[in-house]
Length: 133
Ligand SMILES: [Zn+2]
Ligand SMILES: [Zn+2]
Image (cartoon, rainbow, N blue to C red; front, side, top):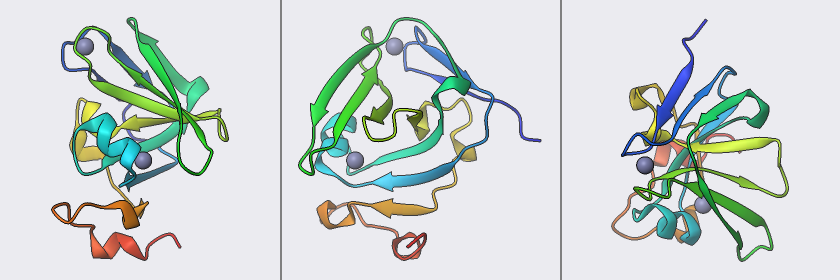
């Protein structure tokens, strides 16, 4: 059995732990993730929302992306670190940003999504491109 997943924001005001296993882990190259993270893509893993315990105040930002999906991004109001997001389509899931983990090396991405939106300076891992399809 793997130890609990735990992590938090840059300033430490928000902490989380998840008792469930990771359902899947991925990189998302969509424009929303680029803007939300300030990087070329987001790296996130999915867990069941009801398995996540959260401590500290978060703020949330709701947005409808190009394909009509309503997404909700959660971040720390003090340091602004992106923590996790969710979509209206799968409300039972949280997509937690990988680098918020206390041990980010536990993150094992298995596929990429929205690779067509990837920036020329952010290489899409070719091994993950065909995985999970
Ligand atoms: Zn913070
Ligand atoms: Zn995205």
